[in-house]
Amino acid sequence: MESINISDVNNTILNLTPTDTELFQVEENGDIINVQLIFDHSTTINEDEKKLSQLLTEFNLNALLPILKDKQITYHSLQYLSKDDIRDAIPNIGLRAEFREKLFFWRKQQYGKDDETISLNTKIENWQQKVDSTKDNSSNARSSKINLRSVLSSSSKGKSLLKTYESKNRLENIDRDGLVQIITEEVMCSDINLKPSDFPLIVDQILSIFPNEEEAKDYYFIPREGKKNPSGRLYSRYANCRSKRVKSSQSSCTTITNETPFVEDEVDMSISEAMKTSLSRDSSDWNLVKEKWKKTFSLRQKELKLMSNDEFFKSWPKFCDARAPELIEIDFDFLYPNKKHLLLSKWENFKKNIKNYYEINIHNESCRKRFSLLKTNSEIGKDSEDFLLTILLNSVIPPVSRFKDKRGSNKRKVTISDAQESFILRLPLITNYKEKIEELVNKYYNIKLTVQPFIIVVGEDDINLNSFFVYLDKTLFKFDSFIEAFDNCFKIFQVLSLSYPLGCQPSWIFIQKYFYNINTPFDIKSPNITALLSFLNSANKQN
Image 1 (cartoon, rainbow, N blue to C red):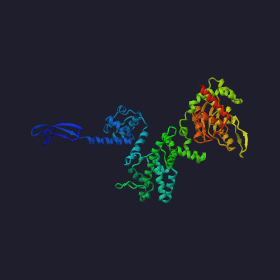
Image 2 (cartoon, rainbow, N blue to C red):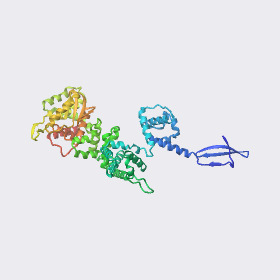
Image 3 (spheres, rainbow, N blue to C red):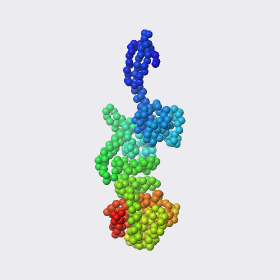
Image 4 (cartoon, rainbow, N blue to C red):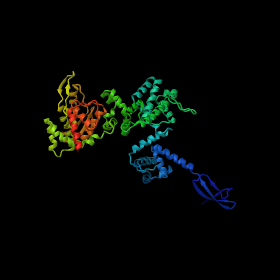
């Protein structure tokens, strides 16, 4: 118990704000008086919580604030937390790991406490550099991600604008409007939510790149005066785009049915174009790529009708990425909801039934020899079996077309061998695939036919296969199994609206109808397709 001197106090309780209490003894005129003081720490608590919130914002982990508060972890106590404390406080492993790494690095910077971290130092240092760069801004964390110089340098419109300023040393209104459009598209594409306080920072970046725009800075943004809203071309365009997105999102939510594919956040064409541009240059965050891919589905479908195949692939270079099959899967699911897994779900039953059909209906001698491999090799691998059962479709649904010469006259009839060659190509080694592709290009281009996507299997013979690929526009996609390559090849035809190769067209139409339950007005009619569908459907009913 402490003793203090105080005058004019008579067994008094000084009640400020009920937080902490302290009992004192005071001496007055020789008498000892007990005084209970109740101290107000609310200001200190509020300040501590504010600091904690700001630090979590720098960590980009605002969601942890209520969790830390619930465990009575304060800004002040952060310097004492151990790994065990963090594990007890934060149940989510992902959030816990990220918080621990960033906290330990922060403590090293603040207090010189050298905790062990799991991630590479360079990754944490890169994060800290990003945080430090935002401390000079009064804006929220999202707006600090706008790097105008980088945005301009990575788009054709931006590069053109920089060249215009370099040659003229000034911008006209048409140039300023173009700059406003570029910035707005980038903000909307990246889903950055701007506040009025963010716009002066963007204007500062404009002035640093285009110094002679100082006198025209009000063209972009005019701060709020009194009760008036901010104005300026940049602010107005952003506000309009944000309003359109909200209305469009609300409208789409009321019209979605179980049978309608959902394209997230229908956006106007300018925003879709911005997303498309960002897809051309960014692939570090593949999950973000896939999200943008979903939101640009409608734009791709429109451009498919307006561009040649070569123009389209150049316009959407992600189709050449090794992970492009994931993007194909996304577009196929939009085109045909709930059908992407149908091939795999039907395949095993198909294998059992198709063997009976082949036994009776294969007449071509070379095809019968291939079929006999299935019956005489009891230890044949699954991929080899799947390959043989698939390529033999051409023997029971033979091609009926004829090749045409340059004048359009019908010439040689398409053979089963031609059909198999344009359907699935087997090579002894993948290293010589380019030579074989060149042969096919010369063969088909000479008669004005293009080389469409097709499957490549690698192995010394039909029953010893080890690698599986799909060829598309000079790109090879590798798959773990034959059936995966087969599935993806079919989906490429659908997603890119490509015609089936003339030689194996009947087989692909059968696959489309039987496995994926897709029927179109453009499907050719064939008694061989009808007979096989009837046989399999009847067999399925009996199973």
